[in-house]
Image (cartoon, rainbow, N blue to C red; front, top):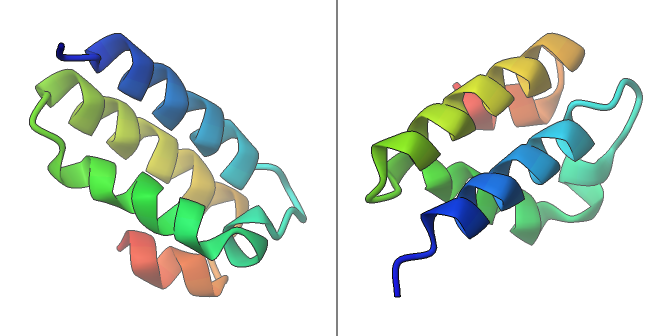
Length: 72
């Protein structure tokens, strides 16, 4: 079963979490952040685009953070 919808919702949820101002979730839950970054190479175009949109929010919320380098 291909669960594109589930992966998209997970990416969007994590993207919102990692985009919270002042939130250190990406640092505190590093393995979860790594899994989030893996969605850039998901087999589904929709999931990859969703990850890209969410990553933009993460970067804008914390452009000087260590996670910004991982996103780039």
